[in-house]
Length: 183
Image (cartoon, rainbow, N blue to C red; front, side):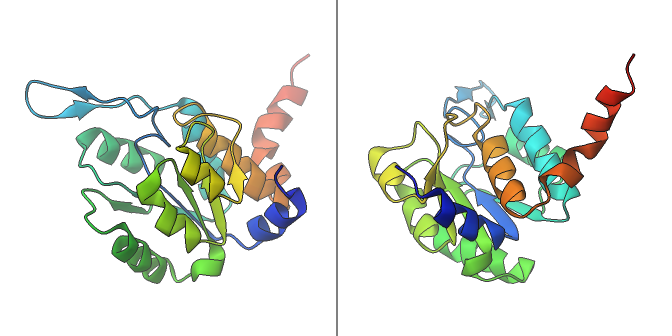
């Protein structure tokens, strides 16, 4: 069982949300195209979650071992501040992004799904694994999402952190107030 008070304390300090792509923002499946490119499937709930994150004045980034024009388009469309693709050394990229964002390890959350994400999770204040992550990855996480990768896990993490920071009602106000205007 996860210690929710510890997770809330950790979440309250987060200023930068970093994540892997394949298996986190997607369900991990790839469609390889004849032209050498690939397609991925992204969940719109994760997109709204990142929009809410950014509207709270916080930054996000993606560190992926693969190169993908689909990811580049998605990250740009969502306003993701930092994108590192084709990463041969995720730790170096992680350190670089912390420097660019002006934060330290005590102010970052990292969301991963597989073994190569564990070193970044271990260096993060809030280590998150998606529900369908590798067993070792889940074991190394402070928090394991209920949602699987590509099925709203990032939205779940955003909500968890913003609620712990007392920002959730502020960023959702425009949606909730629209409901009250309907007769």
